Structure formats: structure tokens, C-alpha cells
Length: 140
Image (cartoon, rainbow, N blue to C red; front, side, top):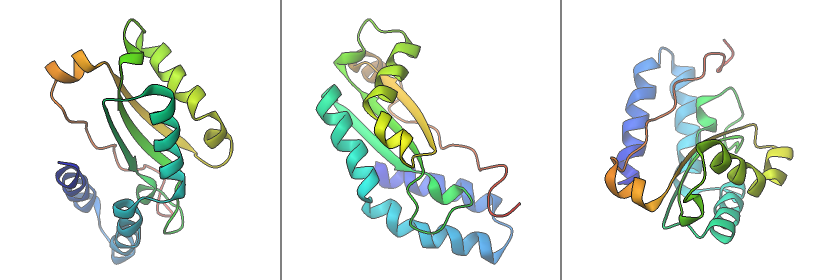
């Protein structure tokens, strides 16, 4: 299913592609997205250790921004955890941000968070939307 989401996101991005430079930047980032880099691994490890998620997805969305190929600066995380039971959405986000506070200080520029309880995950569609294309990226 992650491959399908990645393909769907790529299709959305390619719709916005209007130059060979844009397409080249996307291609250069796809390998990092598929393999996961050290920052992504750290995010995953910290979230797993702190929140014991029943489901977790981490998407490196750096390729959608004006950054060098291989960057790990923009992420979307989907975390499903019992730790979110009885917490408001803002408290869930604060918990994720606190867990990743060092990474947010040291180079993770943007973090989009989807935080659900297992009950929410079971009854809602088990998918997340791709982020919109960066409005100021790729030298525009």
C-alpha cells in the first residue's frame, strides 16, 4: 500500500511538472524516498520507542521543495498509537513534536503530523493525502 501512495503522490507531483529540471529533481529524490535515510530512520526509531505505534508511516517530502537531492528536511508522519487515546489533536501533535524535538532543532524544517488512535484508524479510511506542491520551491 505504501508503494501505491508513493505512486499516487508521484502522479500528483508530475501533474505540476512543467520542466525537465523539475522532473530531474523528482527523479534524484526518489531513491532516497524509497530507501529511507538516516534522519528518517531516527524519526521512526524515536516514534516507535516513545509511542509504541500499531501503525507508522514516514514520508520524506523533501523532494517537493527547493533542496539538494538526498535532503531529509521535510517529512509527513502518520502515527497510530494507543498513547493518543483521550488526547486532543493539539496534545497529540505536541507529543510527536516533543518526541522529535532534537531533529526539529537540527535540520528537519517541516513536519506534517497525522496522529490517530487505533479506533480512529480502524473506522476511518486508512490513507492520507499527499501534501500540496511547494509554492516557493524549485527556484520559483
